[in-house]
Length: 295
Image 1 (cartoon, rainbow, N blue to C red):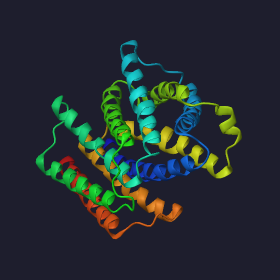
Image 2: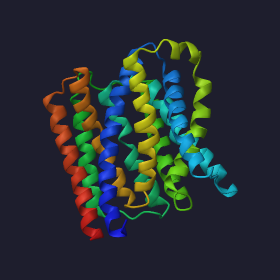
Image 3: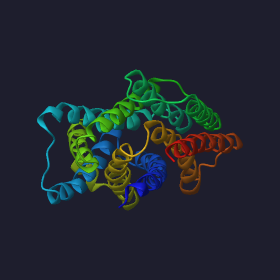
């Protein structure tokens, strides 16, 4: 593939990811409504993802990270897949979807601020404008939720998940400078899975009791939003500025609302729709600005 085609493919890949990750919120809520607790959900989802990555790793010749990178890989797996999923799964037990989407949407800001503070990223004020517009849109989306805002221990868990995801993004960007995206994701998923298993109890019984719809949701969560999308995202971070990649994350709640409406009957309010539109305007602002600068 010619290099000039790579940025366009990266934008297509980002669109695929935000749609799939938007759907993942609906799948998580669907599984948690069944007799699956948050610990079991995390472990089952990433056992599936680990199994998906194994034959790919074997086909690629069983690559391993440089010894100097083992620590970074361990941190990537612990923060990006263990802590993040525990925070989301346990947090959604007491925090409504509107508040959850608002809290997790602080992740792009955290990533960009840390990147700027470390001197690894430069973000122009016009890009900050688009990011702020997106934040306003997310806030309006959360305000439109039927349950309003809930502030409790679950809030802290989801904020912790946002911080963990931000750390994951920065570690990903560092590791993919020396290793391929698919290898980095494979190693991190395996580490994260090992970290999730102790939080799951009686997995054989949970697996035996899975209904077909719940099993399909788990299969989707493990294969697409986990194994496939995180591999794609690691590659995208090597192709576009971090502000561009992270601004797209703001559109995830918009797709979550759409899927929640169509699949779970969670009808959005007028405020939610307005917030979604504002969010997309902010995302488009940053994306178009970045493409103009690259051209």
